[in-house]
Image 1 (cartoon, helix red, strand yellow):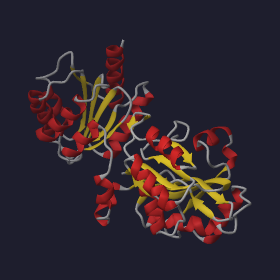
Image 2 (tube, one colour; image 1 turned 180 degrees about the vertical axis):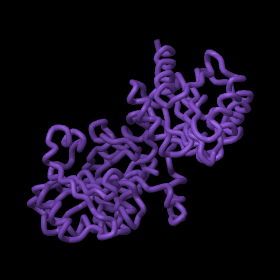
Image 3 (cartoon, one colour; image 1 turned 45 degrees about the horizontal axis):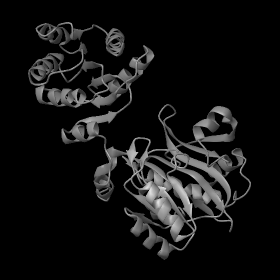
Image 4 (tube, one colour; image 1 turned 135 degrees about the vertical axis):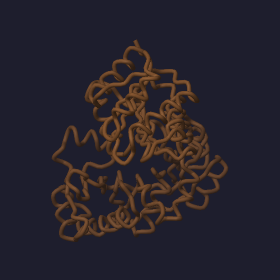
Length: 382
């Protein structure tokens, strides 16, 4: 679950990461009342889950009530990269002397946490990584040992940070606790600033929480109640499916998160782009398959669907019966390519033979199924 900036800052404060107090406002009058309490100048920041808000006009500084009314009025209701702005965050403007970048995430390949730190903050970090990769310190952290002061000092030195170098390890320690004890997949601060009074400050907050840890955090329900889902994700959640909407044209249904991610990679490998991630989980019967097909069928950008099933405990013949039953309930506006392998795969393919047609296609391997799905999607676009 991705948090909005003000929610991320709320998490940071609970772990001792210094950041600005502010107010969430949904009207211009609320923004004016907040600024009168906080004191001018203030910053008006659109609260939507997209990056580059400043460049898109979603962040403005206001030194007077008149300027604030103009800024809040312009931002509230604006379309910011496809997201309608319903809330703004009002906080005191900060005097900025230096801008850094810091983040913690999980490096799954290394099986360790990863700290990324750079003296080139305040700009697109992907662009920094592309043009100045040497400017980003990458430090792996053993989860057993945690972030030691020595390791934090090493990261600061590697990043070439001078001003604030003595205080920064402690702030990184607080940010690390927010990442680990807060059960986050990502915490990112860009920019992490040195203010004119010399204090380090988290001027922004980007946080992704680990949904698998939600049972440990009843307080996350407040975040979830305010969560913005697109229409596809809202339907999937209502049906209990693990679904993430993407931007491609090939719909994906697979059983197991690992296989679903691998399927996305293979589609990309053969020249396509996935429209979604959808994990059926174990034991996909007719009801689960129907729900999955209904979600994919509502996505207007899907041009072909790839169903990739590897039977283990889940039997392919049961999945095949589920597909046949689901197709009696759901009309698909695009071709579907099915790959079955593993337990009772031959029986499953035999069951599917009753529905095979020009638009219901069975392929023997994952790579052939991906190639066919991408070809069908390309044909539809052409």
